[in-house]
Image (cartoon, rainbow, N blue to C red; front, side, top):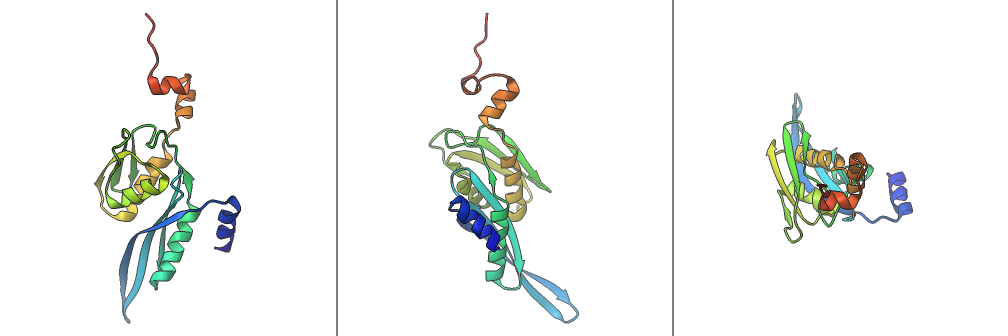
Length: 176
């Protein structure tokens, strides 16, 4: 954990942390019930970097520490264009599907709590989302992450289409 903290301090990035869920779990054994906690945490700098992590422990503070550590380890870059995502995409994880759709300025974040935490900390200000299938917060967060990881930046889209980024935004003029 000290290595991660040093790495973050070295890069000078300041991540905001958010605990999305704390769930109490029990394991029934011959000797009785063993209680533990599972925590889902999201970290992000509200400027295109976000990470999600899960931590499990017998005590809540330990689980939170583990979840935040895991989230910091899983930070990735999200392409953002004018406060929204460059294109529509569906993120999938197990039985959960999350549709992420770009929105015009002023729309805000239309989303459920778990997906909202991820996109807010990523720095996305305008987005429409629809989640279907599983409602498990851990799976929804992972589906959202999968969708965001598969986004292509405008530059990458332009390169694939062999046009300029401006033509991607405004459309290519038809000749004739």
